[in-house]
Image (cartoon, rainbow over all chains, first blue to last red; front, top):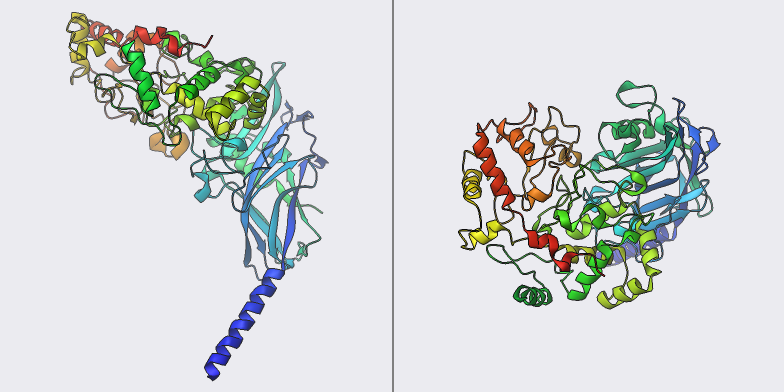
Length: 265
Length: 324
């Protein structure tokens, strides 16, 4: 009899605990500042590579997935979801969505939400996420899967079943003629890991309280911080460095991009 | 006339008619063939409004006169004069292809269509922009509502185009007539060429076999000493896959110059010279690549056979032409 009472009591407490934890789940926006060095990025504005070549950024789209909040003990609070963020383009957002799917069409390049997470309230020591589509979703039948994946996402790669993870496009001048340049980074090998956490110096604090948000800088100037094969600059006159769908040059852009993320002050 | 009737009946039944030794074409269960959908796809195929600047359509690079290839161009020219890097393949019998694109990365005609429509150096249009644009054209809006229960969507655009492409059947060449029993359909030189083609001396048949004269496999045919286009390795990231491309059908090959994935060989004679010498010294060269030692007469006979694969009716069939 006592056992039954004890079991029932523990069960009730567990349910209360569960309910309490669920009640403490709050929304929190991950936002992005798009930058060009120290200045806010302006879509369509002409910038210069370190080699002196003119270029603009007209469009940026990328997926965010595998978001994790970092706890004080270094462990992770996983957050489900896959989002597609678009700057300079409008992806369909009103229809059916994938479970935990999100679509964001930014109006500016500053302080725009790219992922809304739902997590237990509290203070965290940082955040990590991937720019890309999880392997499990990347190769599913594209013709029927809803947004943010599928044919209408603007990210489906027809030649390679899967999605462009990070799509950056603009224009450059070659022999006084405007030419498009683009970086389409995808395939399971090029999922980008963004890590912004600090357990040692206490400089990063993320308060998930239902009121605040977390903002991260993405400095697109870093894309051209180092050229492929040890070259100091990125020569956009070369077609293979102007149009990148894969291969060694995307590998260098990937490495450059790893250093392009930082916590906004 | 009989063909047309049979074709229509089979379309309604969800299959595509094929004669002779052609198998029944596989049709996706979620995209059955209907005459209305085929006509909608045909209209889309020939409509330049599917490109960002309204300058090119699917038919710009896949012209019926050239067995739905690109009129002698090594690579295609997309919007704003941009050049691609690969040769536009024939669409003849494309409904039987097991995978699409030169490295075979696309599993269906529906999904393949997304490539040229969205590629920046081809038609270069965003799916959302295309859907909105076509919704603004009453005849398309009406046609899609009639053909598809969910109306005009990106997927349904690709479904309609794929349905039209599945009708592009080419099986009326002299070779087909010869196989059907007409011994006079091919010249004596072409028959000699056919025997070489399917024999170990010519050694073509290891890759070009079956009703569509392709095994669908991928090979590195030692086109160059290096592999500037990664081919299959673009998908697999494997060194051993660099320079591997799908074996194309060689039906109508006399109409589809220039040749190879990059359109780098201008004539059939030069293609056969390439294979006769065993290709270039490429580190990934297929094991089948070896000097063949064919004489000039034998090469001439092989070319006669290749010319006998030309289906003239296919290039004139009004059902495949631009709608009026």
